[in-house]
Amino acid sequence: MTPGALFLDGRRLESAWLGPNAVDAPTLVLLHEGLGCVALWRDVPERLAAETGCGVFAYSRFGYGQSDPVTVPRPMTYMHDEALQVLPRVLDAAGITRAILIGHSDGGSIATIHAGAIRDPRIVGIVLIAAHFFVEDPNIASIAHIRSEYETTDLRSRLARYHADVDNAFRGWNDAWLDPRFRDFDITEYLPNIAVPVLALQGADDPYGTAAQLKVLERTVRSPLETRLIQGASHAPHLEAKQTTLAAIAAFARTNLTDHRT
Image (cartoon, rainbow, N blue to C red; front, side, top):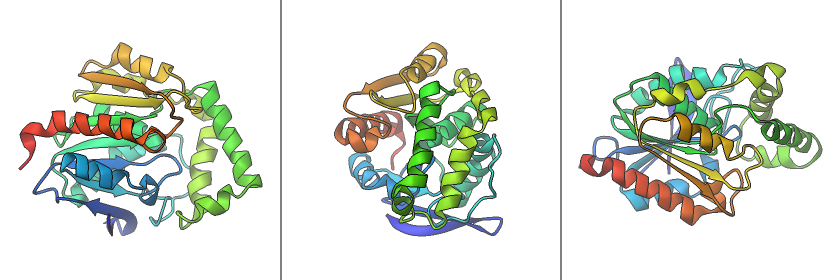
């Protein structure tokens, strides 16, 4: 991807673009997980661009990758703040006019809030990969376990390869999720208000969430919905079951963008 940066109120957001620009083709906007960044999408942008002919845009949220840090502790509303305040400005700054949001984990929750709270005419569909709509006990147990790994193994040094301020990235996410107040996180109220097609994917062996996350979508989403439980995948099916997952995303993108290519 072509590296770059966006600036919001003088603060730097790491960003990258691959393929056609927003004038020439629709855009797939990648929203990373709670410990992710631009680089940690690996070869997913290249494969999606090749499969769909779309442009692919990714950015590292504040506190991640090479973006400017955030103040910690983060507020319990940090995903709402990202979805309602930051993401619209990022799309404006990047000049994106027609897009599908593809969100992984926290990024999927952010895409959900955005689509359910804002009638954004730029967004024609959302792809939710291992998104969280409410908190489950296995979710919290896994996040507590990764804190132990961060403090006792080489996880911190491995993450530091990707994040300019690794403690800011890790603590901002991990401390928020393990705050007892975060047990009240529940974004199911947004689901009936989503007005664009939804593709929801989850690994069958995801330690951060059960199939109940998909089932709540099936009960409440009124727009066209496809859900898939990906066998042989954990929390990152786009990396662990790449062919199956990316083929599903590409087919969804082609279906929902066919009439809008140039």
